[in-house]
Length: 365
Image (cartoon, rainbow, N blue to C red; front, side, top):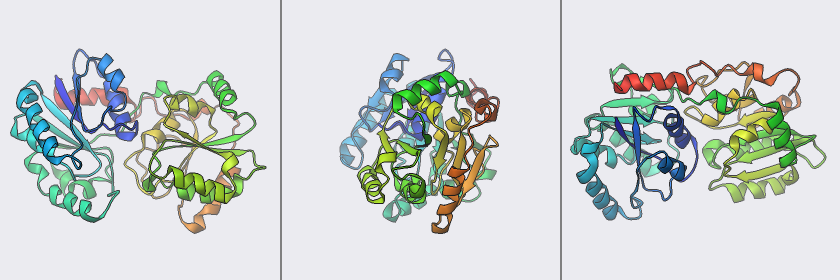
């Protein structure tokens, strides 16, 4: 089966991690993935090409709308007939051009996969999203979501009764992030974390991910004389503002902005807890990976219980009054015991090996 994938960006974030979990674990003799994107290069492009995937780049739609449509149409005219399915990954329905043309050019299965539970932008984009919500039933054949909390906003009420709707939990390979004591020591030495309690946040630097709140809340435990450090892994539009905030709060010595990293799975080994104060989420892939590693996870109470697998996940408020609860939770962290015993990821619905079986079944591979 040949599947055309749309939705990868140049940022190795959540959607990209979801897609790569399938790429790396699906039998390549059964399914071939090709990629269509407006980003050059896309995340993991070299790996994808090594695996035999075609990667096609289109002009950025909002910068070159006419050229985007021209090249998209040319690609579909020439190649649509080669594909059994198109798998479109979106955080909103602002742009459904690819889905529409895939329908017009006859790609038989057209899967739309929801990855967010709220609009990250607002304004006109939200109005466009609401309009497109009414129209996608004419173009898509399958409606997938990573979170059942997201479906009403993304698809509209009543989608859950549609026989083509499926809840597909985000999934990882637990073995890729399993706790390893030797790796932990090596990472802590390399990162200068020896003697510190290291809190890790893995997310793009965006208002949705709420790192501004995290810095304010944890300032009392991140002072110069503290043995607590915060490692923020990821990049984004808020980086400079967050770096200034850390300086103004007097905590810059104990806050590391590590940017985009290719060794995130190793960094989990060196952390002592994972912190995720997001305002909203589908289900964070980083959160799943942290749990696979057995890390204690401090997450915002605005998130649903979807994605919670382990028993050492603590939900905390992200209000001004709730800041003290984050501080208290950090002060109560206990690294005694076997961290590996906390992870219940293997064999759960968030284990990619379980989801690959379902993927084959849904696509009749």
